[in-house]
Length: 193
Image (cartoon, rainbow, N blue to C red; front, top):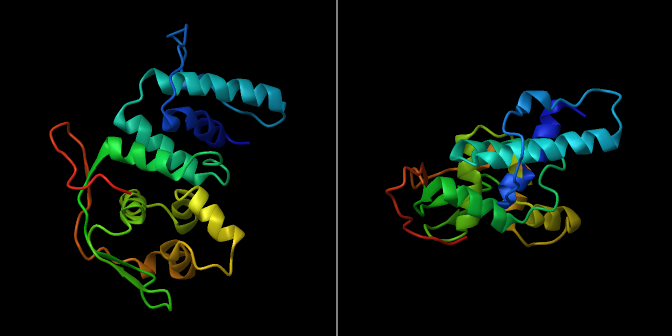
C-alpha cells in the first residue's frame, strides 16, 4: 500500500465532514508513511493519524485534495455517498447550471439542458477542472456507478453509461463554465443535484 493510498484513505473523514480532535499539534503528515511489510493494523493506525491531521484544517484545498485523492484510489470512495461528494464540491465551488452533452457520438448521446442532471454536470466539470481520468471520474459517482456496474444491461444512469462508452470524448460542456471556486461572496444559481 502506498503513502498516497494511506493519505487518500485518511482524508475520507474530511470528505464526510467529520471532526477529530488531535492532541499533538506538532504532528506532520510527512510522518505518516506506509512502508512495505507493515501489518494491516499498523497501516490502519497510520491512516487514522492522517485522518486526524487532515481534519485539523479542512480548507478548500484540503477538501478538494481529499476528493481527488479518494477518486484516484480503486476503493477510495467506498462507503461514501454521491450526495456527500456533491456537498463537498458545493462547499468549494459555486454552481451555475449549463447545458452539456454526454455520450456524444454513441447511441446513448444525451443533450442535458441547463438545470437537468446537475449532479452529473457538477461531477464531470469538477473532474474536468482537475484533469481526472475516466476511471477516477466514474468513482466520483459512488453508489450510482456501483449500480451501473451491478446492472450492466440496465438503463439507469444514462450519463454514466454513456461516459463508460467513450469517456471524455463524449462530453461537451456547451454552456460554458458551471463551477467557479468560491471566494465567500457568491451564491449558487441552483442548489440541486
